[in-house]
Image (cartoon, rainbow, N blue to C red):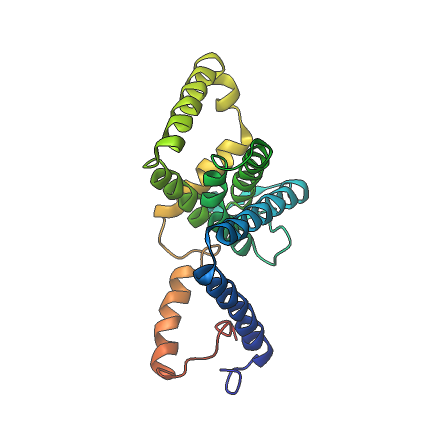
Length: 221
């Protein structure tokens, strides 16, 4: 890939990243339960730390073109909000599970990490990742310990809404997220949503170079 790509350095960087993922995967595949749990704890702590960075460094979020684009999205220590949120979504399910396992201090730490993780995803305003969090929560509802806690939290939320309806209706943050999610069904290309044109161009690029492509990460080139 590096031999024919326009930006060979980017190809090598992606190769190094996925090599690291491969090493971790092999470690998990060959490790015992305790080692796997340590890896998951590290992943959960990383998600919480990134969520905290996102919460303290983002601000002034404004929607553009009716929500199809947004400014001020949280990026954390990455170059794009989607990269941040993809790692957060990966870390969130094990973080929730670890809230119910191990000593009490670890459970409390995982609860804090889970809250920061969710906040990071929300502040990234990445629609696919927000839906990913919802999907993860639905799957976790199949697990009895999580289902009991979710029922208690839902009851508390219903009571809060019943006594504080104005607080939710006037929440700017919820309005921004809701408007952003409502644009998922808007599939037409606009000045702020070039995805359809990009997908159409990708077909022509595939026809031009059907075997070797253009190199990992080199689409924009």
